[in-house]
Length: 353
Image 1 (tube, rainbow, N blue to C red):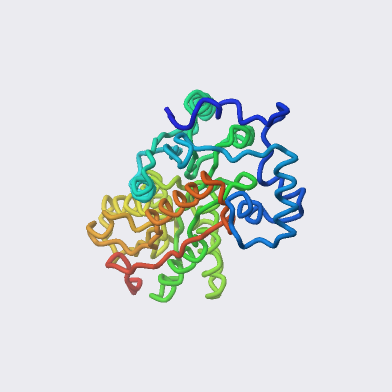
Image 2 (image 1 turned 60 degrees about the vertical axis):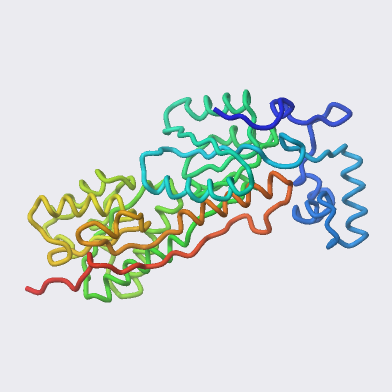
């Protein structure tokens, strides 16, 4: 599945004494400095004090540290881009961003999906050992801790987009301001006059899902509207769960007047559920999504949503991985790009009477 650096990556670079290659992180810990400081010394940067440089260089020499060469000795050649699933328009947007940066840098991209099936992540790791990669971008996927450790042992840099749970130690992560976006979507509906606002959530294992739910609850709390747990239903970011979630909300004795779906695909599924019951958007029910996928501006009605900069997230992750491939450590381990509420025709004040 992956073709990348030379075969020496399979077993890790060895020091002259035969011990495993020391990492920049270990050098930084022993020297009592930051990882970026060690990276600057390794890359010959001048913005390090002479005393610190001497201490770090002494440790690099004592541990037999060697820069990890890329496939052609000068730059990265191939990256892995790994999703849980690929059957989603937002995956295409992330791929678009990664590909743009990789293409400009002359780096190839291998895209794969692990599908959360038993053993699939292990099989992907087996393939990676056989055909080494210059770096991995992992998108909303869960890999066992041992696989993160194995990537580190192999010297394969890792960047995570929308981590599930806590990202691997020392793995830079790229996300969006999901809490702020969830709050903005809910505040918009509150400002229109809605007080019973349903929420269709994403997979609870994902930090982005939990943040959007927390933003929804925070907006209600600030407005003095009690959180009704009956108005919160689970989903998985895909159309069908939006459809079934909306049906559950509509079957309540006191249904909501608006629904905030934690993804555009679920919002479209909710709109279909309303249509089948003869209900109109926004006259009978307002709908807000999350992502701002290209197609939602052309649906009927055009969808009010929270714009998530998916392509930009892919670009940033690729740039971070290019730096890591050159052993330039990122200055921040966690970066969140801003979300933005985009108001279109799927929201309106609640119908009176």
